[in-house]
Image (cartoon, rainbow, N blue to C red; front, side, top):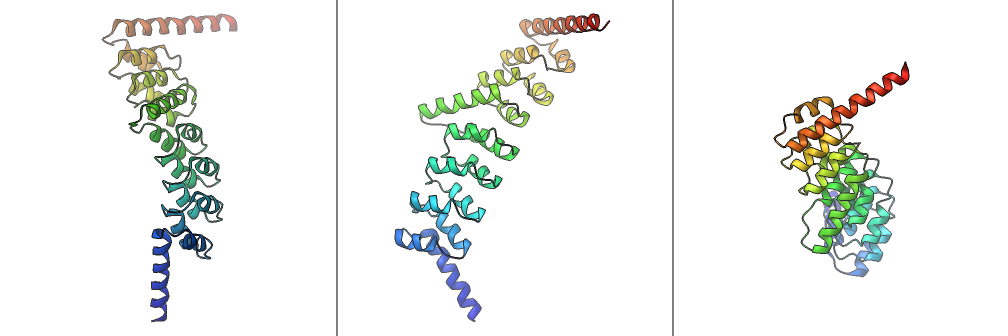
Length: 239
């Protein structure tokens, strides 16, 4: 009976922590010894920016994860949490729909693949505001041009923008598997970039030799000739 009463009291406290709009109540519960209670406060949409900033320093990563997940967490605080040593915290920020394009661009360079991929997928979400649309498109373009992570480039290879897929097709770090997919792209300009990529495999070039567009086939011929000349020069130098 006593255990049931304690359990009910704890459930009630958790409910208050998650739903209360009282700054005083939330401030008090944010210092509760039970990290589950602090998690609920961190998830509360009424938690102030100052309170979330305090909870972002919590020793338990689950509390910090809730701060990262809270849609009312300021972008400045998300930027701080993006440096969190726990990858799950960074992954949630990468998935947060309010994370800025600039911060997502940084997370796209994360050492953990899951974080990188979440960030790039988030950058691909539909934008209704024209300024955000441009910022996110520019961010994806820059990542497609400079990233050396094949997993990130594989995501951008499916981008709706023909221009971004063209950049991925030209990137030296794009994997053979991704280049093979891009070699089948409906846009001939994308296939052309695959043909001109010096890291495109001979097998893919062989497929593009039969492309319906003359200029793609011509680029394959030129690329094969360039490679043959490079091989001949290398052979002569080694003699």
